[in-house]
Length: 167
Image 1 (cartoon, rainbow, N blue to C red):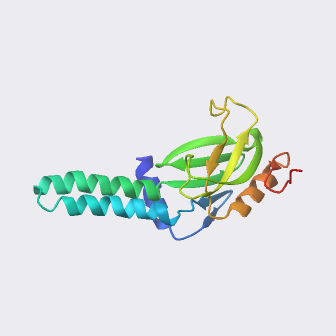
Image 2 (cartoon, rainbow, N blue to C red; image 1 turned 180 degrees about the horizontal axis):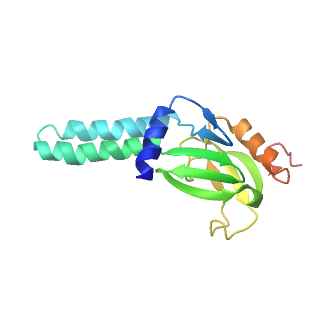
Image 3 (cartoon, rainbow, N blue to C red; image 1 turned 135 degrees about the horizontal axis):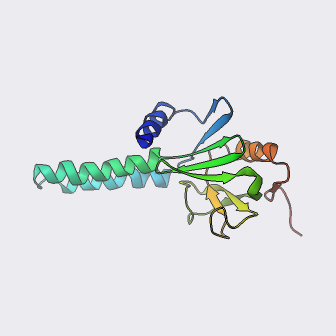
């Protein structure tokens, strides 16, 4: 039931970059052209290849894959509320305490999770037990600068490694 409510809320606010709802701020995920191409191209190819198939194949298989692609596009966003960063991927939340964030850094790349853009924010945690991993979390909010500034405002001990220069 909560997935349905999250899906409806996400569709209602799809056009906004961030929503200020009381004490939480929602940052939409940036979606690059290559992700849109995948999410539009795959269902289009499925529907084209299903022309000579029975009606049930078109409805269940192609319709299901199209719905899965929509969930992938619409089901990713980030919330900063109270003392938590909540990462929604496929409408499933992952909670990260802001107090456990060690540093943030602007990165680019294709290989990571919860981000559909090359322009991402890498978040390293001071406590491995939060996500059971040493790897940084990479996400892709549309407003990277505002997102990083909000995290640092909530926890001034977070280092912004994207502003530091190495010699």
